[in-house]
Image 1: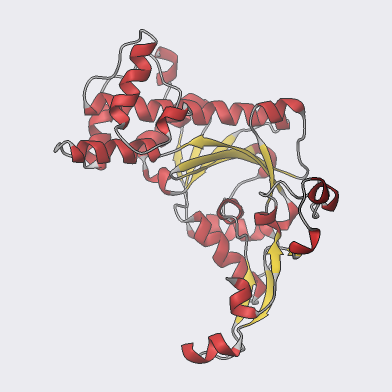
Image 2: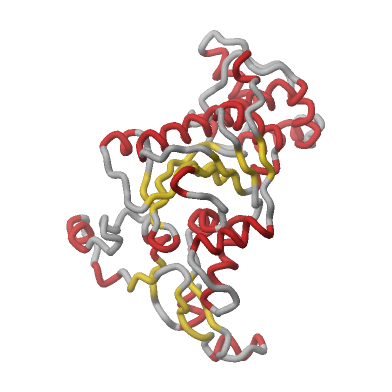
Length: 319
């Protein structure tokens, strides 16, 4: 898209870092490319997020009634890179959960972690804004809830998620959580039936009814998020005191509270549209509307979009 807009062929570094083709120095690994049969000449120059690529081509600008003074900026084009840039956190003592259909859980570091233990734990090192490293892993997200609601609607039952979450909050917590990363939960389809099968296969009591099913989903997601935060902290050496949740999932107050309970740490929820904010902030800085480093941009977010704070309720003690 940027090439079509400007005529400049370039690869933005945060997105390039997800290909597995960058070395630990953050540059294209041409030795690896040749080894697996790829021509290094296919891969364009790397540019940093926040780089001005150039003005619009006349062929684009004229039909839109614009001028070539309109600049195109390469933002953190991996959506999680832009989201993390807009999280108002102190990286030396915080972890993050970017929660949408998927959950991305990790910490921000000055350098990658390339231990065998981190590889077997399914953590990856991706580049963020200002060369920082997003050390994270994918965890199942709100896909489980959206597919469950769709199934109830197909069955002719009420499928209002807000109502179901209210009912789930009043329901008893499940005796056991389920493995949200089980591959059976990835395809679309009858999610409540698959969850019930997961429990029955292990001789465990399955949730009974929509409220209990939704409660089991939210409890299990909270447990998975907390486990991933603990693993990220242990593998990276970050002493995590606070966890930030951004994305659509942070609107789910039950999920936020249960995650804080499982973490045993405060959870700060928001902003919801972190990816868009990170994009806007980098573009604004590149075009002179704001200034300062990443920490200054995060301070702007904290001032304009106050987070909702959830503290552990102590309920995990009784569980």
